[in-house]
Image (cartoon, rainbow, N blue to C red):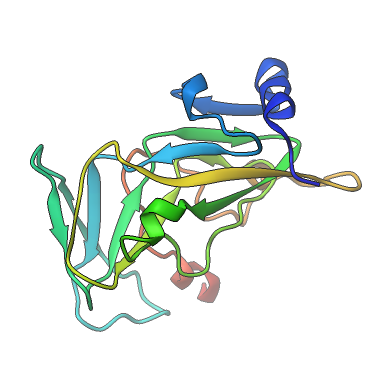
Length: 178
């Protein structure tokens, strides 16, 4: 079941949902709008290896925006830091973002109960498009969980994305091979 706006607000009041910064105007009837952070990342190497740590370079979006190019892959980050202690958060693109040909995630739209961080975005574009820091890019939707959570994400020893950051994070797939 998807949480309504009143249930999201109740989760924020109880501390089971954290959104920082929180702006009441970004709360929809059953979602919360998130915004593009100032930092993007791109992989340094032209060929990626799932067994190796693939490095990225970070750069900031200038005030006049930045044109993203097709056939390039960008990692972005949300301005919002979030925590979810009782619900499963899903990140979906906004329809206005999609209508500009911007995809914000390839496969990683679902978070886990216990995810406490900003969201790394997997950005690709269909046409050249100028993006800006702070533009709405996605919306968080929260689902109820049926049953007890034995090990939330932030308590898992195998969790690869627990380091709090305001920059996009590269793939940690290589840690699966250790």
